[in-house]
Length: 206
Image: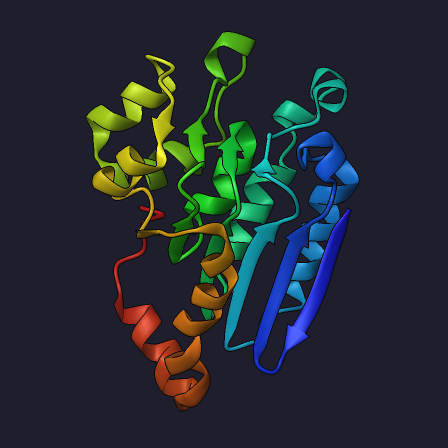
């Protein structure tokens, strides 16, 4: 279940399946892609989740039925990466598995202290989506990417901050106010200028 809300020039997209740790179904992925596509004119897009977990990744039943190898994951990540405005992942909790892709595709990532980061795709017999290791390595380097994907290690929020996987760690009650605060300059700027600056910045996709 996905909630989409507009706050002026900010589009906020919220994963809203807290009873299932925001595990993603095929329909949720399709709804996320549609929500991101519909936010192309926003000055900024914030991705977040309800409850204590951002997302546990793919719903296990759906994954076993084929969702784990669906091209929808890559389509979602690429749609986020292609947004002309600022994109922020406001991580209300742990990020696991395929949900990592949408987080890596954002321009900025902020998280609560309780958040953990892991991507146990190998032990389930699947490959990560093609862009995920590339974007991860651009942020934290090849060795730490292998530490997570091949050694199967789980990063704490403090480790994620030191690695460069997240940009700020702050208390839960400050998370969303800070996410909106980070959008302020983009909202105030001429949008053509803001978009041009984003295009000039290195893209972690390659």
